[in-house]
Image (tube, rainbow, N blue to C red; front, side, top):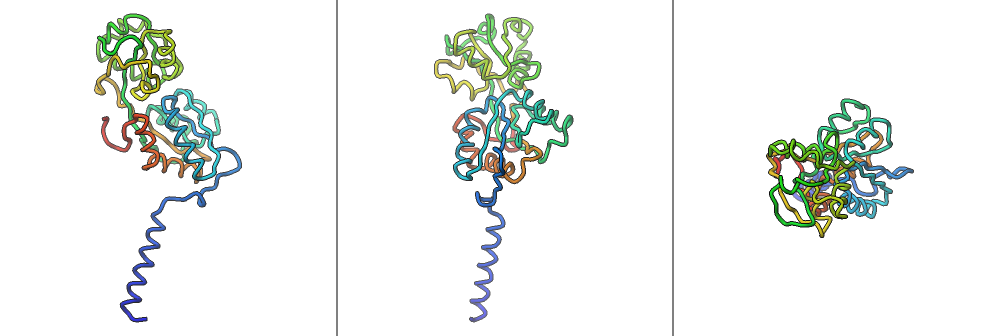
Length: 261
C-alpha cells in the first residue's frame, strides 16, 4: 500500500466518521419506552401535528399520543404534573409562564416551529368591513387566556373597535370551537387563525388582520422532563424538513428566528 493510497483511505474514513457523527438519530437509536409518548399541542395545530405524528410513528415504531387544547389549559396541566413529554404552544408567553411556574418541567431550549396569521371568517360573505361583520354575534377564543383570543382582542383594540363589538363576542375554550360555531351557523362570524380557515370549506375569509395589529403569532415548542431521546428526536424532526413540509401543507408559515411573514 503506497503512501498516497493510505492518505486517500484515511481521508475517506475520516469523512465517513464525520458524516455519521453529524447525522440525526435514526429509528434504531431511539428508545421508545414502555408507555406512549405524549405530545401536548395547541388546538390550532391538530391536523398538522396528527399527520406528522402518524409519519413519525410509522418510521420509528414508537407509540405517540397527541392531546390538543388551548395553550393555556395545556400549560397549567403540565405545571400540575401531566405526563407530557413535549409542549407546543400557540403563544410564547405560555412557555415563559411554564418556565417560571414549573421550571423543573422544562428540559430543553424552546424553539419557534411555525407562525400564523389572523382572520375573520363568515359563511355569508367574502369581504366585509370588520366593524360591520362583528356588529352581530361572533365567536372568538377567550381573550383572558387563550392565545387566539389574546391576538384577536389586540387586533380589535388596534382598530379602535373592541369597545364597540366586544359585547357581541361568544368566548370559547380554544380557537377550533370558535371555528365550529361559525361553521354550524351558531354565529355570523369567527376570529380564527389563517390555518383554521382552511379547515372549513363552507366558510370564507371575510377579513385579514394586519400582522402589525397584534403580537406575533409564533408557535413555540419545548422538550419537557421525561421527554428524553424520543422527545428530542420528535422535536428535531418536527423543526426540520419533514415537519416543516407538513406544517407548510396546512398553511403554517416558517418558524426559526425570522420575523413574521
